[in-house]
Length: 439
Image (cartoon, rainbow, N blue to C red):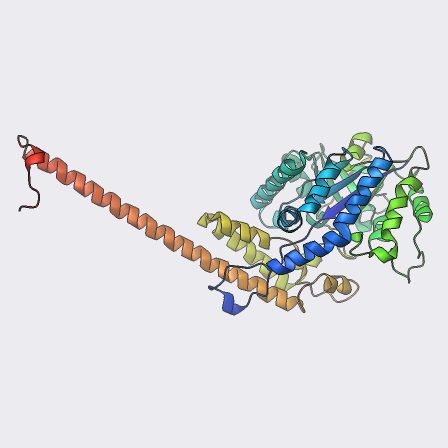
């Protein structure tokens, strides 16, 4: 018997506009509203709407035997609300089937765990509330941004009340082990760890339309056979991928929608096979071993580490400055400025600064709205400089208000003192009869 667990990541950042040095101190509009709306509308048409429609059709067709899981970042949900409410409606329609599970992550799809654990916690709680408000679900599964994971993260997330966490099934971590089992994270014995089968996931997400691939074309029956091979070497095949795989990364004319439409029927031909959500898989199967993962890993690039976001001096300088300024923003106590700062914590901003030009270079260039990584760095740092100015202005205003209040309080105290003194000196006089204009 083999269970297939489809998990889809849905995310779009708030992209920065080309914020120049001349904008610093003069313009607090950091984000490119036109570009963000354009991207959401485009991907909604190519991916979100047609794929959601197809999933709804498959769920109804297979009468509850086809289940999937999603994680939608808080920033993409905000953009659905702003630019594409029909997409949000289609996700709510999926939620009502009872066959779709929504996971939790950081609201701003950030790297905050690496820099500020309190901020990380706040973002997780914001996302948890957003998912509950929109879809009526209380998630018990957590996936960190870009599947970034290690022992420390698992222990911290367990402390937030989560029961299951996702990670990459990286070869250098697993060794001879299989990603098709459920594990226990070291230091988090009450949690369950589910690992992405990156080979089978990437066959769809990256290799599906590659005519140079030895297995091209990827047919439904061929793929179903590959999944069946897990029988005897595991019990759950975790197919984790970006949702934009369907229609955006793999265009409609590649046949990706036809592939997805016919896959459930082919998998379910075997009566012992099934589809499960992440939490269903963790409830159904017992863990086989403990996994000890000290160093951070992710699902990005061939290295499966943090180098896509923190692999060069530009990225590290930007990230460290961002979180240093974040503490100042919080001290300033301005909710609107805090929200803008948090949108800057989205991992994509650092991804745009990546300068790897080897095996992963084309991937980074494809997703980059800037002509060069250096342009991304300059725009980002210019925005941070403006935020510092805004913080200083807020502090000056607060000091001025505090000074005015203190002066008013002092004047009131002096007036009260004069009144008490006058009354004590004129105990027999009627104050209403006194003309205070006369000396």
